[in-house]
Amino acid sequence: MKSPSPDAIPAATLVLMRDRQDEPPAIMMIERGANMAFAAGARVFPGGRLDADDHVVAASLGPDAPGDAAHRIAAIRETIEEVGLAIALDPLPSHEQTLALRAALAAGELFSTLLARHGLNLQLDALVPFARWCPPYNANHRIFDTLFYAASANHLPLTATVDGSETVHLVWTSAEQALADAEAGQVRIIFPTLCNLEKLGQLASFDDMIDHVARYPVELIQPGHIEIDGVMMLRIPDHLGYPRTCRPLDGTPRG
Image 1 (tube, rainbow, N blue to C red):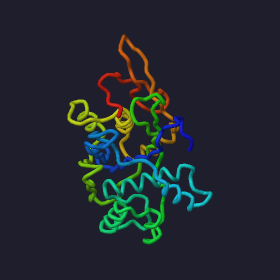
Image 2: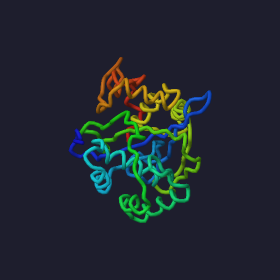
Image 3: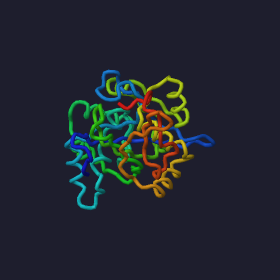
Image 4: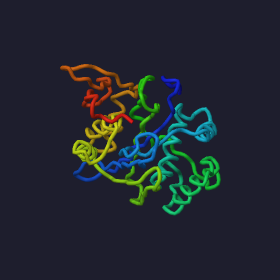
């Protein structure tokens, strides 16, 4: 997948959605460590950059694998590393097995090696792509070309835990509550995450996410600037299912 910016770092992030009766879906969010190079201290979704082994695993799946297979694999791997939950693996590892996978990844073992050793198969279609964001080339912070995925967490145990370094806090929250926390200044949420929370806030279930993806294409979003009534605004396209497409430039965290 070709990046629009020569210095962009390929990345993937995963929104885990747990349906709740008579309530909006619960969404997993994590707080990044204060010493991280990008989005330090921000509340985000699990995920991170692709590594070389993600491409090795993707190549092993053969020609029928989706073109974004390496990104989906990175999202699965990073979710194990950051929160100790295994998604889209068959058979589904137990909690103890997932923690063992997490420890092995932290010790430097390759995901490809672990999948083979434990007889685990990938179910990449469990991840639904719903957005792609990459800042313009002249952005004044580290540039990530990030694919956003959603997956149902209805079948997963409530055993997620932070790793204590990259992730220091974890919460299951509604999109509405996460946005309210950011508005109240209780948490720091960067611009792409804010926009995607607003998108998620329109959905009453994971099935609604499936329907939403069928209506709106995944197109590259590169925020631009526009002046409205003397105020400089961050702007995104208005045809991709986002309920709000402009935010004031000042006061909106971007990295």
